[in-house]
Structure formats: C-alpha cells, structure tokens
Length: 363
Ligand SMILES: Nc1ncnc2c1ncn2[C@@H]1O[C@H](COP(=O)(O)OP(=O)(O)OP(=O)(O)O)[C@@H](O)[C@H]1O
Image (cartoon, rainbow, N blue to C red; front, side, top):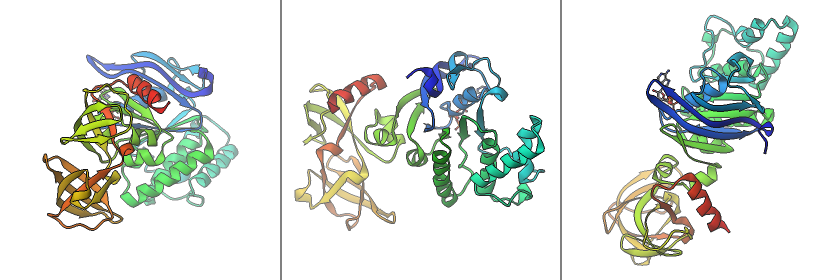
C-alpha cells in the first residue's frame, strides 16, 4: 500500500531528551478507520508517540505522515488530529456547550454552524440536552464523553486517546470500552488508543503494538498476540500465563519438568533451550494417574465463573489453572495439555524472525 492509503505512517521515528533516547526507531503503518492500541508499562514511550503524531513535540529523526502527507514541519493546529487526554483537560468554569464550542469559536466559525456541530457531537456521545450543564456537575464518565465530543467536533481524521478511561471506576470503564469501540466503528475514523491495561487493549483493538523501553516488541491482532506471544515479556504482559523452561526434542516434541510433550510445530531445531507458554484456561484437570504431570493444589481463589488454582508440580514449578472443576486445597491432581495449547517461544527472538518462523509453521 502506498502512504496515501494510510491514516498515519511513522518511518524510523526516534526521540531523545538530552542524552536519553526514549524512542528507538519506531515504524508504524496505521490503516484508515481502524482501532489501534499502544500497550506497554509506564515510561515505555506511548505518550511520546501520540505527542509526535499530534505535533505537540517533534521527532528527533524519522518521518511522520498523516493521510499521505509528510507533517514533520506542520504545526499541531494544522493537523487533522485531535487528542483526548487522561484528565479530560476541560475548562471547569465553562458549561458543556462552551467547552465543546471553544475550538470552533477560536477559528471564528459562524455561530449557526458551531451550534449545529456541537449539537451533532453531543448526540454522538449521547449527551443531548446537557448543553447548559456546568462541567463541575458532570460525572466522571460524562466528563469523558464531553472531552470526546470536544475532539470530534473538529472532524479529525485521527483521534488520539491517552489513557482516557483510567480515571473511571471498573464498571464505568467497561461501559465506556463498549461505547468507544462502537463510536469508532460508527464514525470510521482512525483511533490510536494508549493504555497500560492489557484487558482494555484486547477488548477494543483491531491491532495492538506492544512497547518496551521505546521499542515495538510485537504487533498484531489481539488474538495473535494472546495466542502467539513472541517472548516472555509479551506473554507476561498480555493475560496470565504459565511460562516454563523447556527443551526442543524434535519437531512437534518438547521436554519440560522431565517429561516429553507433543506440541505445536515451532520450527526450532532439536536441542535448543526454549520456554513454553500455557494459558491457565488451557490446562485440563484430571485424576493424578491420568495427568501428563502431577501437581498438588496449594490455593484456590473463587473468581466468579471459574476457580483460579495455584498448584505445584513435582519440580516445584508453580502452575496457574482456571477451571470450573471442583477441587480441594492440598489435593493431588493431574494436568493435561492439548498439543496446540503448548506454545513454544525462543529466547531473544526478533519480531521479524518470529514472523518468518510462524509463517513457515502455518504453511
Ligand atoms: N519532556 C521530557 N523531558 C525528558 N524526558 C521525558 C519528557 N517527556 C517524557 N520523557 C521520558 O520519556 C520516557 C517515555 O515517556 P512517555 O510519557 O512517552 O511514557 P508512557 O509510556 O506514556 O508512560 P505513562 O503511561 O507513564 O505516561 C519516560 O522515561 C519519560 O520520563
């Protein structure tokens, strides 16, 4: 695809503050109308990437394209990009209408057009009728929606959202996840969403970039990243996992805890030390004698739809298991794994090599 067909392209973008490099050659190609998430722990550079796209700060090197046009030299107010901030950044002394109208009034757009656009934006975020309310009289979720309306009123090509849900309580956050996703699909504009919350990223995104210390570690659909994490960092960050040291025995066979297991074909030579990832929900419990591994239940946590069991195998490895089966603390159990649930990872593999290996494996 040529750059024209992308909403945002970053080409080898770096950023340094004094001697510290906070972004190391970031490449991204964001298609129009999709929901992208930048996911990673605090300080990994997510916000810096948003600020570079918005034009609030410039890249130290590399190119930034928006809607096919190079924008490195274009100021923030001339980019068709708007940002929704974590703290909403609303004007507390203005009512809802004036907050949303502010940007348009500055641009000296006529009052009638402003009214029409504000009305439309309020309708989009389901706040029609709230025009005259003071910001101080709005709840957290409502303020969030005002902030989104204020961004949408400018009809941006790209909406950047910097941890917009983190100030909300859990229930409201889940509701807003649905709302945002639905809004994005209805509007068909490109969303770039920043979060350190992996559940949020999995639930909302078409495509996720996992970042670590200023670099993209892995990118892919939520399912790809959940099912095929490239390394321990991604596996740990996305969902709960059991990660066990292992050794490739031959194609389709891997050894861990002193036993040999059938596994997916990983395209990794025999004898190589690897790690296997097994998700807690992919382990079946059996009687000890029927299991491929034996373990002893240590603790059980009731999690609503399932029980979370922590058990220790014969080598004292800890296993987390999500199950609806009933077991007792202290009980001996068997663990069973389907070959395709045993995901093999190589140490220190680059994303390119990982992709090539998977491609070969999928053929
Ligand atoms: N103006 C600045 N001057 C110096 N260092 C900065 C500046 N802005 C950001 N940094 C540093 O750049 C790194 C990346 O920051 P950034 O805010 O992009 O991370 P983040 O992933 O968004 O984290 P958070 O979720 O905590 O906001 C951090 O180490 C931060 O301290």
